[in-house]
Amino acid sequence: MKRFLQLLVVVLATSAIFSFNAECKKTIKITCRAKGMELELCKEAIDEWCKLHRNKYKVEIVTLPHASNECFALYQQWLSAGSFDVDVLQMDVAWIGVFAEYLADLEKLLNTKIDTSDYFSAISDVMVADGHILAMPWYTDCGIMYYRKDLLSKYAKDVPETLEELYETAKYIQDAERKDDSKKNKFYGLVFQAKAFEILTCNFIEMVDSFGGALLTDGKATVDSEKCVDATMFMIDCFKNITSRSALNYSEEDARGMFQSGNAVFMRNWPYAWSLLNAPSTPVAGKVGVMPIPPSAKGGKASGVLGGWFLAVSKYSKNGAIAADLVRYLTSKEQQRKRAEFSYLPTFKSLYQDTLVLRFNPFFNQVFQSLENAVARPSAAFGKTYPRASTEIFNMINTIISDNIDNDDCRANVKRLLNRLNKKLNDALKKAKEKKPKVSAGSSIVKFISDFWNKLKTLANMKW
Image (cartoon, rainbow, N blue to C red):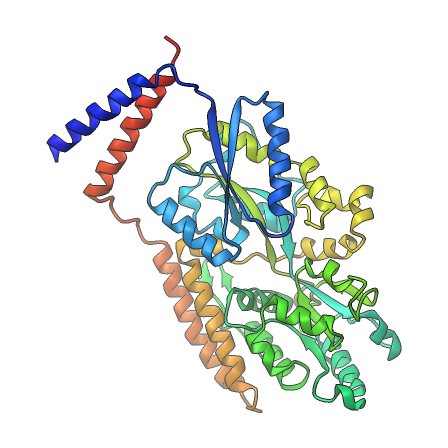
């Protein structure tokens, strides 16, 4: 091994000597999804940033897979290997806590204090880990409730202010509409997503929040509390009386399809659905209203789980300061104003009073309240174990609903299963606090070679 390292050092050193006079234009790599207008808007903003810096830097875009779970797996592979390939990472809001140890302190890189006062509180909270700002919000998202304005008007019903009122209104209109034979057993009061996937974790968290509960309290799991039981019982009651059992396998698009075809009164979904629902060719165009997930009459608040994407700098980046400057520019208020024209929700509260933004997206007024009350997924607390914790949550909640739809007296059983989930979540929290494993000898050799090579590159780029 010693002989091998000596030969490798000679080869690398020789390579560096021949590159002394090479062009030293720095290249920054950034990941970006290609969903909707995302990639195109990213390219435009990067071109503007490069021009501001007189094209001193080159920016390469690494296109991410469409599926977020594939993106997550890719990041796990890159970061756990100590990859230097990508400087700026587009990250889902729930991943910041998971990958916190691999992300750079942006305030340190920028050598300035980052003002978070104009962000929604749920957003500013997830930016920070151990007192360091590790990511900047690019655009946000939150769960909201859509409703049929025309049907509420037809049956002289007000927009519900509580979950219980929503349930009663949904049941009343569902039963009335089903008197039409063409809608019998096809029309439902409420449609949402209960597939055993991350979306169900989101739905469960905001439902618990609406009842005044929480998955975690003072660093410990409290998913077996009476408020969490109440929230779960409400979801079961919905499936018994106002929600199709098919929704146990629904993702966002499945729910949208049902609501958009005119077969539901209410729908829980993300803001992206607004423009699709209001396309001129749809049966519900111009008939849809938006409101936050209402609170329970038993306590709690209007809610909506936080979604959205952030930009972070890998701690392995050798161009950290430049990469952080690019992040600051891409997430700036001016760039978010431009993205808002294409219905990407801004993360700055002040932009929801911006005339230009509201002209393109009048429904942003209703989304604002949801963002004010948004609840974040507990990814920061679970850290690397969050994927495991979320899997435990959505599998258990899906099972609880499935097994108790036909059970009239199921509260005790729900409590027992939530207690089992609580123990699993506490185990995940305990694992998250365990010390990191020691670096292996093989990893030390790789790190030595990488550090040595980067020092040689630095020498090669110096002016002599």
